[in-house]
Image (cartoon, rainbow, N blue to C red):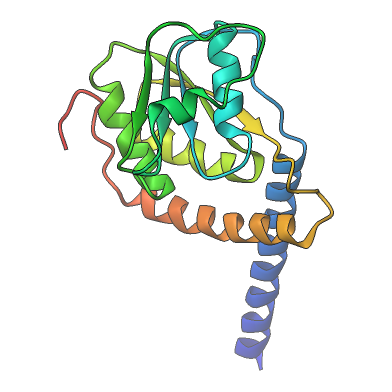
Amino acid sequence: MNIIKKIVLGAGTLLVLWIGGFGIFALNAMFSAPQAEADTTDAIVVLTGGQNRVEEGLKLFANGRASHLFISGVFKDVTRREILALWTGDHALPPCCITLGYEATTTAQNAQETRAWIQKHDYSSIRIVTGDYHMTRSKMELGHALPGIYIFAHPVRQNDLRRISPRYWKLLFSEYHKSLYRRVRLLFTARPALDETE
């Protein structure tokens, strides 16, 4: 009987931790805000996959928040001209230094694609632009792939995702479990120095 009680107590504890963890995760996403929004970084890194991300990256770039803009995970058939056409702001975009990455299709691949790009530049800080629900896992992946690089979080709220919509909560629920899984995996993944080749 003692063994059964211990099993039930252990399962109950895990359930409480799981529910509490999701609550904290959801609150962090819902009430997240851009980190040090007025500060500049060496580069802006946009992770594609959701509404408003590229547009927000272009806005930050046009406003002088970094000297280089890197957009990771661009679809193969999307051209540079199509990306630039998304900018409709009053300030003109800088004449150079927008790089498109076409290799990544997952968040882990975004991190590796960004790592390969960062290795070609002498940068020490980046600003990540991605969805608010996606920021925790993105920062975790990039933080692991880019040791020594200071990372500013710039979460984006998508117009097509209302906080009370089932779709938003489904995304949060999915991201919570993906983040838990990747956190465990990264604990057992070597973290090479940035100047080391893969």
